[in-house]
Amino acid sequence: MPSNRFQSGEMVMGRWPGSSLYYEVKVLSFNSDTQLYTVIYKDGTELELKEADIKRLSGFRQSGGHSRSRSRSPSRRRSRSRSPGRVTRRSSSRTMETRKEARKELKRKEVQEVQLSPVEKLVENNSNNKHDTKAENATAHRVSKKSEAELELNRVAVRYNLRPRKEEVETKLSEPERLEKVAKPLKEMKLSADRPTDLEFGGRIGAFFMIFLLPAMTFLLLLMCSQEDPSLLNFPPELPTLDALWDIQVFGLVILWFFFQALLYLLPVGKVVEGMPLRSGKRLKYRINGFHTFVLSTLVLGAAYYQGVDLSYIHTHFLQFAVSAFVLSVLLSVYLYLRSRRVPQDELAPGGNSGNMFYDFFIGHELNPRIKSFDLKYFCELRPGLIGWIMVNISMLLAEVKIHKLDAPSPAMILVNGFQLLYVADALWNEEAILTTMDIVHDGFGYMLAFGDLVWVPFTYSLQSFYLVNHPNPLSWPWTVTVVAINLIGYFVFRKANSQKNAFRRNPADPKLSHLRTIPTATGKSLIVSGLWGFVRHPNYLGDLIMALAWSLPCGFNHILPYFYIIYFTGLLIHRDARDDKQCRRKYGSAWDEYCQQVRYRIFPGIY
Ligand code: NDP
Image 1 (cartoon, helix red, strand yellow):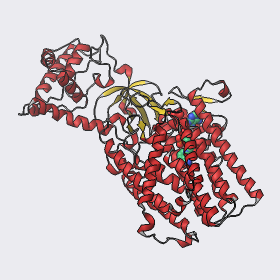
Image 2: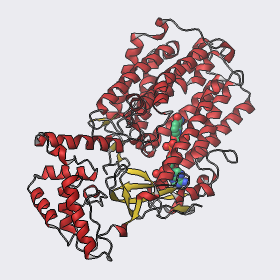
Image 3: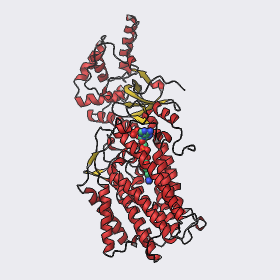
Image 4: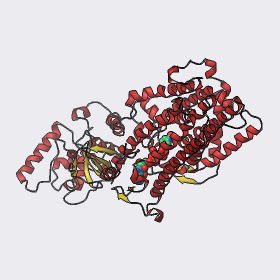
C-alpha cells in the first residue's frame, strides 16, 4: 500500500489551488489510486490536494504571542505568502546580517514590485514579528486608516494574490473603481473554486444529448408497445399524427393532477421532520404526509369511478398524457433553472454548478428549490409521478377488462398491479427515508429529476401493464406462485436492508442493532459490515432488482419490451453504485477501502 503522510481527521495546512497561500484544513481521506488527499476548509469547501501542497500544522504555528487578527475564520487567517517580499522568520540559526539583508531586500521589493498587501503586513506585525522594520510600521499605519470594507477586500485580495501592481494603483482609477477591479476576479475565483471538477453523464455534451434522448426513448417505448407486434424487428414504429400526440383537455388534466397533489401536500396532516444538515449548517423541515396523500388520491379516483368516470381514458390517450407530462416537466425545469440563477452560492447543488448552462439545466442547479415552505424537489420525488404511476396501472387494468370484455382482470395484470402497488405504498409509507437519499442530499433539482419524476417513472415504469392490455399472457398456478415468491424475496431484501441502514443511521446505539459488526470511520459515523450489508455493498439495490424481475415475468417471454425496466434499472443502479462509491470514498477514505475489502461484491454476490 502506498504510504500516506497525513491521516484522516488530522488538521494540516493546505495550499489554496492556484496560489501560494495555505489555510488550515482537515484531512478527510486519501485516495491511493490518485494519490490525492480530500481536505475540507473551514468554510466547507472540499478539495483534493497533492501531498506536496499539504504541510504539517506545526510548521505554520507562530513561535510566540497570538494573532490579533479580527476574525477566527480560516479564510481570514494570515497566510504564509511566498510572495517575493516576504521575510521568513523560522530559522533560529539565522544571523543578524542575514536578517538585515532580508529587510533591505524587502524594502527594495516593496518599492519595485508591490505584491505585498499593507493589510497583510498589518496583521503580521500585530501578531508575530518582533523585528518590525520602519517601513513595515509605516505601511501598517497608512493602512489602518482605511475603511473596514476596504481592509477586508485588501485582505482577501492578498489571499488570492490579486493585488494589482503598484503601477496600476497609481493610474487614474478612482477608489470605488479600484475596489471593483480587485473584487471582480476574486468573485470569479470563488465561483470557479465551487465548481465540480468531474462532470457526470458524459459531461456537457452528454448532458446536452440526454435532454433530447430521454423523451425520445420514452416515446419510442410507448409507440413500440402500442404496436400489435412489439418485437424489435418492427422497429422503428410508425410515427403518430399530431392529433394523437396533443390534446388540450389531456394537458388540463395533467395540470389539474399536479395541483391536486400540491394541495394534498399542503394539508397539515402527518409529522414534520428535519432533513440532513445543509452546507450552511441549516436543516430544512419536511412534512411527511405522502401516504395520506396516496390514500386520499385513491379514494378520490375510486369515488370518480363509482360516479361513472371512465378511468380507461388514460389508456386510450396514453401518448397524449405522456406528451403533456413532458411539456409540464420542461416548463418546470425552465422555471427551476431561471430561479436558480438568483439564489446564493451555498444553496446550489455541488454537482450542478459547472457554469455550463445545458449541464446545470440538466443536472439541477439549485439544491432545494422552495416557494416559501413548499419544497418542489421533495414534492415531485414521491407524489405526482409515483402516485400517478399507480393511477396509470389502474387505468390499464380497467382497459384490459373493457377491451377483452373480461369479468375480472387477468392474473398477469393483477400481479403487475399488486407488485407495483406494494412498491409505491412502501415508498410512501417510508417517505422519511427519502431525506437521506442521493436525490435529496446531493442532486440539484433540474431537468433530470423533473423529467424522471413526472414522465419517466409514470410512463415507462408502467410499461408492463400497458403491454398486457394488448398482449395478454395466461399464467399457470405454479408459475404464479413462483413469481410471487420472487417478488417477496426481493421485497424482503430491499426493505430489510433499507430499514436496517436507516435505523442504524438514526441511532447507531440502538440495542436492536447491537448484533451488527461495524467499522468506525474518521467522520464519527460507522459502516455496517455484517448481515445484508456484509453480504454485498448494496443489498437494497439487489432486492430492488429481484423485484424488477418479478414485475416483468408475468408478461411472458415473447418480447423483450416488458423487460426494458429491469435492463434499464440494472444500468441505473450500477451507475448509481459507482457514484455512491466515489462519494463514500471521499467521505470515509481508508475506512471505505477496508469496507470494500471485507465486502467484495457491490450488488450481485460472486458476480459484481
Ligand atoms: P442507499 O440508500 O444505499 O444510500 C447509500 C448511502 O448509504 C451511502 O452514501 C452511505 O451514506 C450509506 N451506506 C453505504 N454503505 C453503508 C454501510 N455499509 N453501512 C451504513 N451506511 C452505509 O442508496 P440510494 O439513495 O441510491 O437508494 C435508496 C433506495 O432507493 C434503494 O433501495 C434503491 O434501490 C432505491 N432506488 C430506486 C429507484 C427507482 O427508480 N426505483 C432509483 C434509485 C434508487 P452515509 O454513510 O452518508 O449514510
